Length: 164
Ligand code: FES
Ligand code: FES
Image (cartoon, rainbow, N blue to C red; front, top):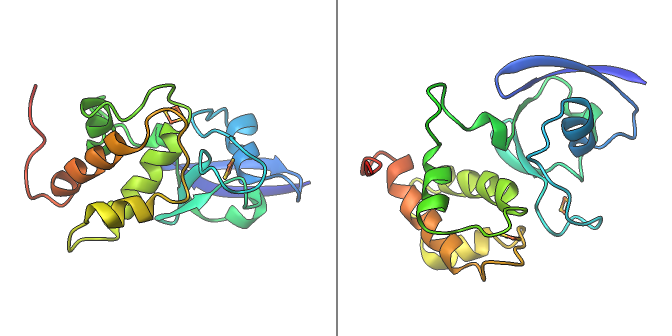
């Protein structure tokens, strides 16, 4: 057992973990942050994607002890203090980019990293390529691409989020 300390969604947390414990297990089982999902055991599906120090990471493929001292952001940390959604969450809703919702937390976390790392713009091809690490069984991907394309100008302050 090792005690690790890290920042999760802005709060410092400590947990006793075995050295073999995966980050996704720590998030789900110790911290009860169950938005991050597990969809495979071969690092392919991306349902487990969270951000570690600002980069999207498959949390099933990282040990919890490797996150010692890191800043981890999960889907639960995206919502603003006033309850309003992150633009990526809002655009997924508006563009019908989810059905069962199982891939959605990982998809949203990957999409945010994709948008943040392309301040110059994102083509449809770049979005599709950027999502290759995230599988979805329901949507056929088209509406996910639309949602991410719509979130880009909002996240880069080119247009405000449309009020309903
Ligand atoms: S659970 Fe499938 S890639 Fe992590
Ligand atoms: S919405 Fe069901 S797997 Fe993507």
